[in-house]
Length: 232
Ligand code: ADE
Image: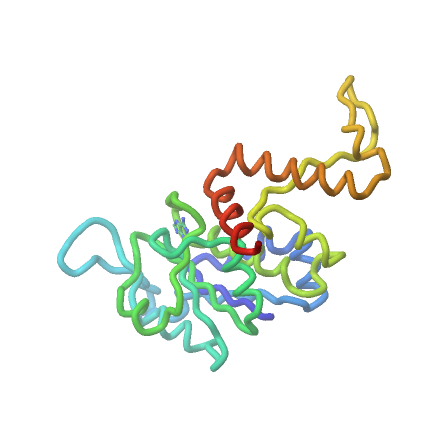
């Protein structure tokens, strides 16, 4: 998979995408991340990429022409274009899995107070928000999306089971886990995990995952219950 990020701040990349699991995926060419500097596609020498909105109002908008030219410089017939914006559909694990199927994902990092609507109307396939809060620009959101997508690609995580069992993959939060030592400052590892009884361990983990989800995320718990009913 290849991911391109259209941005006004190419120097932010790869940043966190250059380390750990995702960095190693890039080294192994399982996923590559490139950037396109939108400013290079400005019509004037000063590199103007933003303007005041028609009709007045606060702030500046990203102009349609530099964005369109930047996109055309890398677009392929199989590209999917995603714009990061707080007004987009909410990013979640399901959308991450969907995007992980693509050969070429183009992330456009939104900026300033917004973007000329004509760019969205004619070039953007999906507008995506990473949550109900406003970041100062879309670059962090683009990194979040790229990270969540790349770690799902085949071969990126050491063993494929670890992305199936984790939080959100089945509408449940992850169960509590423990490693050495068996006792730390009088806190003991739950006895069941030392029992060697795999059936009991499985049931304990499931019930802990359900308890945490019910307590912390009533919205996910509702979804989980509905899915259980459907499956029966
Ligand atoms: N840009 C600013 N805030 C954002 C958000 N919450 N999600 C995606 N892009 C954004």
